[in-house]
Image 1 (cartoon, rainbow, N blue to C red):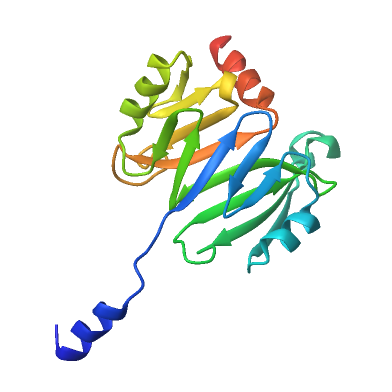
Image 2 (cartoon, rainbow, N blue to C red):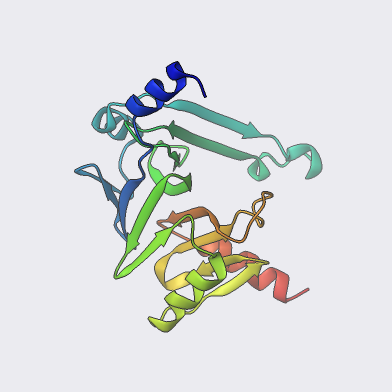
Length: 190
């Protein structure tokens, strides 16, 4: 590395993780902001005052179900990448009425849930066992993908998400996780 590279590295801002507090049944807190389930999309955007990517997609599945449009899936989300100083991928998922329903974090956060901390550099299976020792039962929905019904959350390894490594690579929490429970029941009944 030349002198210019050394000087640039001395003044480079370190990549930081966003600290998030997740309260099941309520929502999340970070950066002195509280985002509760059922908050309006525009209110959240205004509160966060940060650039985001709007990603609203309609998956038309009616052609596979004899024209039944009730099978179509509408995904409405705002994606926050590099929120303020942090190297984070934060997805806020909304209902068709633009009400917050789900939150996904793909990297760049330290997440506190009760007295346990989810860090993306920790092996997912070891983290799942830590939750279990604290009385939270889980179901491994697929290899290295752990669902905690009582906490209304799931996390998965990078490998489970298509990457490399057993470390946590994905965190998901929602107001309602009945769709995951129903999927587990369906798989078990096959």
